[in-house]
Amino acid sequence: MPELPEVETTLRGIKPHIIGQRITRVIVRNARLRWPIPASLQTQLLKQAVQSVERRGKYLLLQLERGTCLIHLGMSGRLSVLNQRCVPQKHDHVDIYFANHLCLRFTDPRRFGALLYTEKPVHEHRLLSHLGVEPLSASFNADYLWQSSRGKKVSIKTFIMNSKIVVGVGNIYAAESLFQARILPQISVSTISLERYAILVTAIKKILKKAITKGGTTLKDFMRSDGSPGYFRISLQVYGRAGKPCLRCDAPLKFLRSAQRATVYCDHCQF
DNA sequence: ACTTCGACCTGTTGGC
DNA sequence: TGCCAACAGGTCGAAG
Image 1 (spheres, chains in turn brown, red, blue):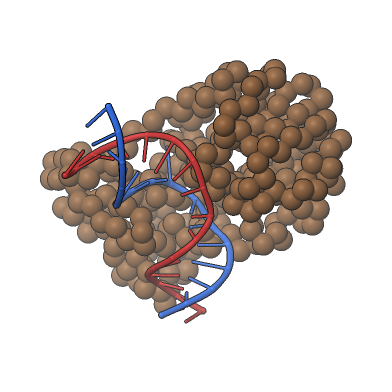
Image 2 (tube, helix red, strand yellow):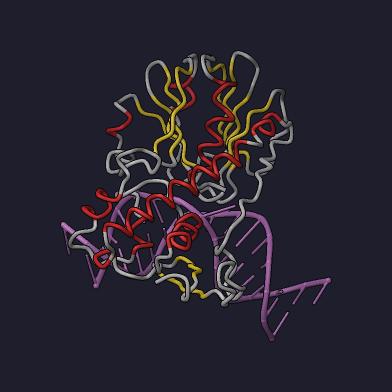
């Protein structure tokens, strides 16, 4: 599930339930995530209140009184807020209980996710310090992309998926944005004009915002006792549609594997 | 300095 | 139906 819109939806879903709440108990059933959850985490979180919940790229940051809890959902992670004790399932690795008796549960079958804690300034953390601009901020614009791409040869798809450049554009939204902007995924960043970068930036922002709006319609589901997320499937133009007709020109969509990621595009509409 | 590639995991899917 | 390989929405860090 987790591309930026899903992470943003998760943030909006959990925030109202845990903001201001004091942590009363932490249960770690499986510490073996992408980085092992430190054994000290349970003690460190205990009795701290949540001051704010923020997002940086695809990282969720629970700002506590003395430090910050960093959460990444990886490929298959999920956070749910449960209002009563709910029997943990196979992949429910962490529970954080609050004074209001709600439980924030971290579920992640593939365990590519992460849950860490730091008492240093969180934006200086090694996982955050190198991150590029937020795609929905004003800093993400055509000039920025054009400037950042000088002297580089990478393909435009690899480029916009590079978190040092811009955060939160994953494989699905990269493919969709490039289709919308009519740019071939495999062309080099050095060949793209400022004007086309402007079109691409607009497409990325539009698609991410639309996806956030759609995810936002299911926020009530966060309180479902079974913890199922129930996201609407976002209507996708190219992702997962290789060989099927292009929705703009009817030509069969092409498939390409670049940097080990599947890409679908239309070689008639995109150039 | 830039770019590619392997690694981390488990669940699902599709071909034989 | 069963088995097995390939693949999946991420991203770090080593190697080239």
